[in-house]
Length: 234
Image (tube, rainbow, N blue to C red; front, side, top):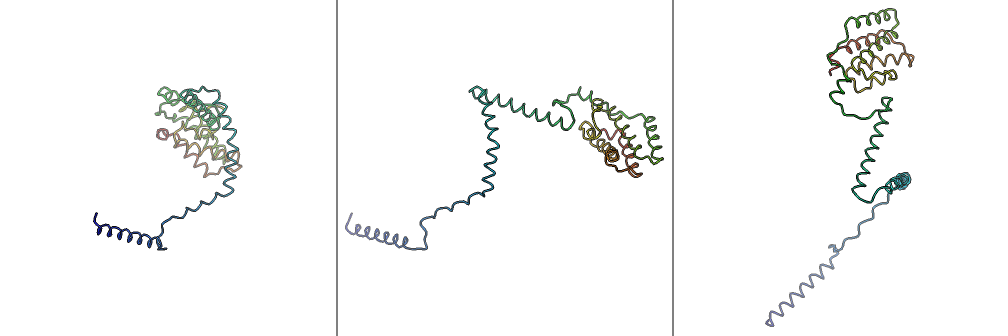
């Protein structure tokens, strides 16, 4: 390398060093980032709540640890046993739900064609016209005497008989009208009509509110719609 080239390279290096020093001396240029601010600590109530949850869950953790201590060390066996326990817990919750809703212990079951045939009478069933008219005449006679409470109660009994013919396994002596009104085995429109009659009777018997002529007319119309085949096919 010639002496001229060496001199030019040294001069370029000096200029670069001077420019770098000037850049570092410029306070408007930031070369370092300040540390990120610390996040604010969680509120004390949240910390206390977390500690309380931990204390509440500690016995559950010990319980699961105790159950796990009886299981073999094989991972697949443990997965299988935990799955069996989870299914058993879900089944227990289902039984409790059925007990609270229907008043009896019921196992979940797949609805087959045979089950449907046993539980549901042919949807073409229509109540005999003559008995229906006789029931309505008796109820109308009570209503004409101003005994609207008894007249509506009369229709409720007849409605329960109709449900028993359409759903033979649904109506049981221990079942209340409120439970019948919530039964999934009854189609929604029929269930709503039956519930409207049952509410009037319940209000009269337990709420101390007498049934008037307007209530009677509403209940009579509800029963007339309740007996229609289309209401049960919805």
